[in-house]
Amino acid sequence: MRKDGTEISLSRILKREGEVFQIAVERSPFQGQIIAYFGLRFSLFDKRSNYDSFELICSIYNTENFSREVPKSFNLQSQIEKLLESSETADVTFVVENQSFRSHRSILAARSPVLKAELFGNMVEATQKQIKIEDICPKVFEAMLHFMYTDSFPCCDSETVSAEMAQHLLVAADRYAIEGLKALCEKKLCDSISLESVSSTLALAEQHNSSRLKNSCLEFISEPGIMLSWMSTDEYVDLVRNFPSIMVEIRSKVNTILSSMDVKRQKR
Image (tube, rainbow, N blue to C red; front, side, top):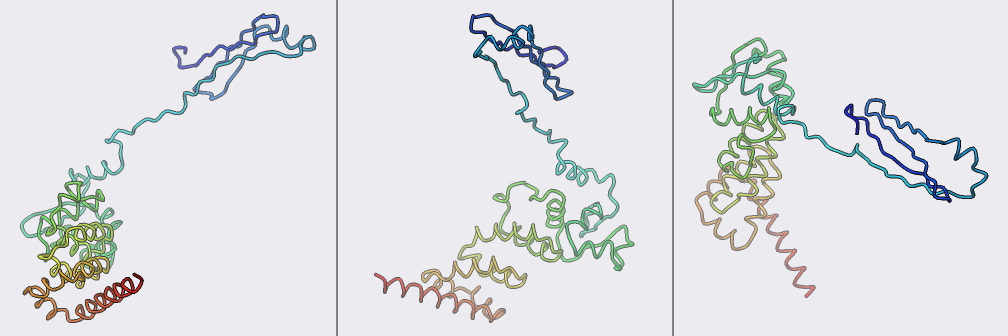
């Protein structure tokens, strides 16, 4: 290889008598073209009628199949996250209790149709530089903002997010119609359903129209052993009192499971 990056490879054409002709193949990284120079080509090809065959020996090198990792500092997601961290170009401030969060209207509008309507619609917030947020704690609002800028939880690992935090974030995600965050919270809560949490999780699913979360809860409590234990808790009594329609769905789910069990017994 030359200093300018041009690659040179040598190939040989071997005549029957053993005489060798060199071929220098030059590849320019700038032109992307291959130019072949044939040493003594006239001696070989002008007299081709004198030879009934020749042997071509060559080496082929492919230097284009290589990958370059883009530095994280050039990554779009990383750069957008820096906007949240620095807030240098922020054009709106949210006040949650005693804390302030500076943000960017365009990014929030792209992530949430609710915030888009508030920040760019006919609402009073569209002209305000400082907006007060009610009924949400600063820690949850901060986590929601982080997701809107990065598409991930603040800790970058859903496994380390507590079920309680996931419940609060699901409420916030439903409030602002952030479907990606809602789906992430649903998965976390589905994976952490227990006898102690199923009542509050089922109530949450009912309040915020989460069919995925509700079905997971119904699957969990439909097990005969778990069902009896759950129905003896105070949380069950409160749930049925506040959401009587859930009992209808529970009975339907149990009947479906019992019917399936009967079919399996008959096949044996």
